[in-house]
Length: 195
Image (cartoon, rainbow, N blue to C red; front, side, top):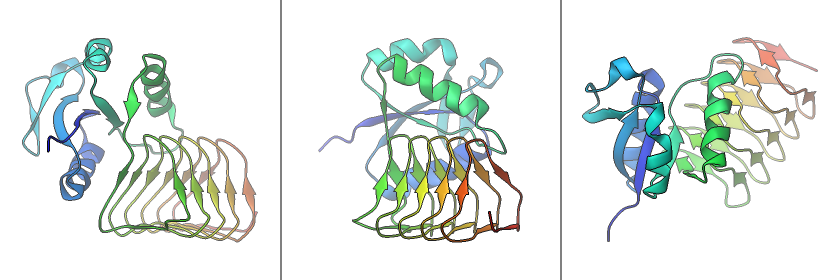
């Protein structure tokens, strides 16, 4: 059976981490990477950077699915702009879950989101579109993570927390249960956020 084709958008360090998850998951064929014009012709873990932004309409028309593989430190900026551009073009956005992660059958994970190795998304949790749930992050029961968020490595979003769209939760941060973070929040690494 032929695997569906996937185009990655972004050719930096986060792209390498995503490729590792995608290859281990084994559901997709990586058909190419969209990078900056000066990156065209390089390879990332054996996959060619063979496209730039101007190629996106043709790639969508060809029926590829997409995953944004540029990182997010702080505000979602370029990730959100590209996601909205791709959706406006009619692109299908892949949802990627590492086989080394745990996502409850009772949780929801939105389109364009990647759940990295050893992350855990527990029962009745909701993760929005275009998110990064990074390595060893925990999204506990009944928590809601909005669209365009990054829950960084080893961060803990405890039960019942509401994280607004476009937020960044730094590595090792802990959010106290049942608090609400407004959209665009930035929680620094190793912080204990009590609301």
